[in-house]
Amino acid sequence: MSERIGFIGLGLMGKPMASNLLAAGFPLVVHSRSAAPVEALAAAGAETAPSPAEVAAVVDVVITMLPDTADVEQVLLGADGVAKGAGPGSLVVDMSTIDPIATRRFAETLTAQDVAMLDAPVSGGDVGAREGTLSIMVGGRAQAFERALPLFRVMGKNIVHIGPSGAGQVAKMCNQLVVAGTLEMVSEAMVLAAKAGADPAKVREALLGGFAGSKILEVHGQRMLDRNYAPGFRAELMRKDARIVVSAARELGVPVPAFEVVRSQLERLVEDRGGEIDYSALVTLREDDAGVEVGRP
Image 1 (cartoon, rainbow, N blue to C red):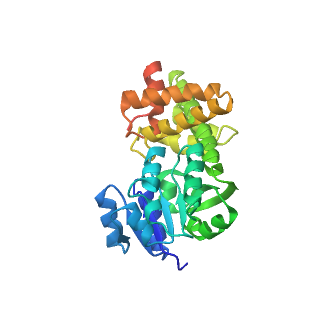
Image 2 (image 1 turned 180 degrees about the vertical axis):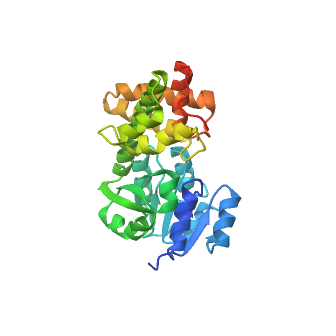
Image 3 (image 1 turned 60 degrees about the horizontal axis):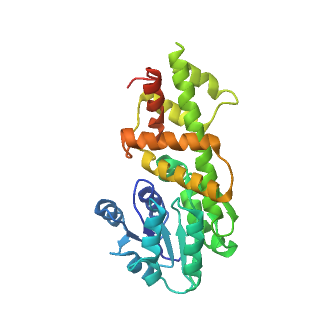
């Protein structure tokens, strides 16, 4: 691929995603608020630019991986944003998880200046980002999707074009509803087992072999047993995603009663434990309530 790629947002997910593109041979220009990941990628062969506008001015495709809707709006449409530097015919691929309605507005604004936009949020956490095995859910025009497909194939394995602009964010919203909801159920099951005197590790092993088996039980169930809450996906970000789910559901008139409870528990987790801990620490709230620990370090 001869097109030059810009990557903005080199956090826990963005840095390994950008690194994979660089390792695959894509010419890369990077920018981030933190200097350390920019310096690391520059040492590996990437070029750097001091602002989103200056990234966009020298590349054909700009990828963004940012924490929240307001961050994406600032980077894309702010005073020194991508829209200021992007030339006609360029492509913006936002891989953040943000509000689908705002996404459609951003796409309309960029389209008016002949810049295409895809929303392409991901699932798979920091492990998937490092290993290039992310699930990528894409919204936007088919032609833009085909153009970005070689990039997606470096960063992910399960790549689905969901539909028009915003559809990728809708799919990610549904993903987070299922993921966070399942995490709460796994947390409750592990604590229930411990309180009843059964070995949670053995209960997890048994459940993994049946219909209750899931990636959440496999990965985060083990985190709970190890009491390993180093951030793979920060609680603050899952709380943000849960707010998006609840807000969109209310706007659409779709009741999500079980998820309302999960969202409230994520709020409590961030308030009690801080937002930097992994969201699998949700189990610690159930442990506190039951007076029992699932595992020990």
